[in-house]
Amino acid sequence: MAKRANPGELRTKIEIKKKTVVTGANGYDTETWVNVYGAGVYAWCKWVNAHGQEVFAAQQLGLEEVATLTMRYTPLLTAECEIYRYGDQKPFEVISVDNVEQRNAWLEVKVKRKVAA
Image 1 (cartoon, helix red, strand yellow):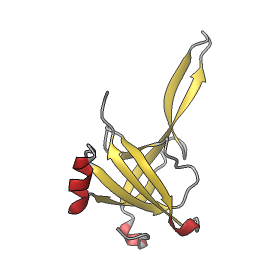
Image 2 (cartoon, helix red, strand yellow):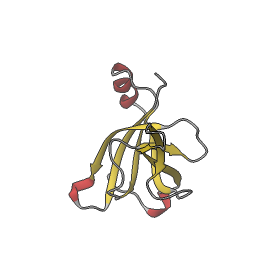
Image 3 (spheres, one colour):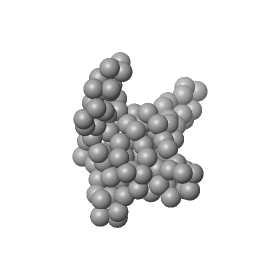
Image 4 (cartoon, helix red, strand yellow):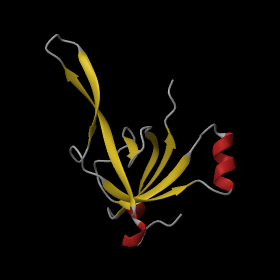
């Protein structure tokens, strides 16, 4: 996987959501997932599903539907976030976030499909 992408390769729309806890009027906490950019705003990335040796390595670790995303740098994306591909209902968990060469230009993000417990 390349550590950067040409602008024409950033063609997958994703929504990045982070968990927020809100205390209601009755005193109970409610967890909700909120888009880090604001409602209805998407980011663009290069999405590459695992292939070749990566598939076998992922299966040995018990991971399903692994992918690598290359996107422009944002400090809003953390390991606690969930990523939704445009039109997809099931979220992807963030496995790792790599600020490429610590230059704040690109992120390389490893994700896996979130499995219901």
